[in-house]
Image (tube, rainbow, N blue to C red):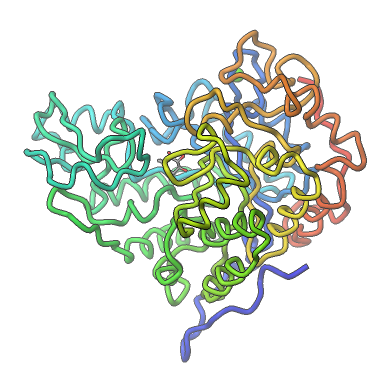
Length: 491
Ligand code: NOJ
Ligand code: CA
């Protein structure tokens, strides 16, 4: 297996930025999950930190070394938590700050690091900053958002969710002004050029770092650093902002990292990593992701090889995050029209499987027709191509999707733990999102407990041992044996 720490470009004549001692993020296996759909401990139908704690031994047994938690802070939940209404607390539906700290502590005891989503391009419109800003033009929060007296000429351009989102500017009656929102209209953009907003972002990072996280998956980075305003026709990225975020983080906790969500072209990669490796530690490799699915669909691996080559150069401390599927649609927007058509034809032929005119909203297993050989091939690529693998919860057991649910929700159903009612996710009559119960991907057939007992299942068979093989012997508490024995206990 190739090592993720392969030699990379070092700027001529410059000493490298001092590296994090063990470069843990280069040897990591990251597992991403949403607390609300992972495990419900108190039987109210919603996943919580107490439930997640009970499943830490299962995660440890898989061989993962870091957990990426999707947003769990207070939120009206209109974009699955990516619409935050209070950055400094835990959504009471998932527990308390105390539960959070218990969880990070328990993870650390098992040698598992925790990174969390940092969603600071926008807030929820219910956030008190926006409520005060719209109510009072003299409020200290007015300039924390992006306003215009008139409807900007660019209002109907730049939507991230085409077909669902109609505009990037909406009129707010209370403010008597238009406000900018790169995403849904209930997610007003923060004015990230405002020094007070920038200071608040650092404060948010400092808060969670203090509570035991090892870094952040930073949401929508190109939009966070872009110029915003009614006269901005072509946003310009303020890359220097990335340096100050990193510098702050590393002053506070030296080995913490930022993993950037930035679906950008290879020619700008270095702007994000920083030529001296002084900006983002990690970025998701969207180029490789899209071309990998094209290769699987067409049996033509040449564009994938080109994508790997185009993304090869990076500072020696920087690292790619490699993924197959995530919680969003499989975005094929960077492929050519023809390539996209081919991937659609193979993996998402029906209209109901496609989304935002550019992607496929299905989970990995059904896209690959549940074919074990194909799934293992995809996994072996993710674990061996240069980068840190980032797994999506449920994909390790081959979970399916529920296309009756709207937009991206179809691939966000609760984790299937066992053959118990609701797949053992909850004891409530009604889970927050229905558990997949019927068909070949229903919990009676696809669940963690049975797979952990079966020595040659998807999550215990030969492909699964990649995760164990990648374990860093230096990470605290990690074991060197291949652990295929963690059967989730019944709640
Ligand atoms: C990217 C996240 O992955 C997505 O789920 C979310 O809707 C947008 N950013 C807005 O926060
Ligand atoms: Ca609960």
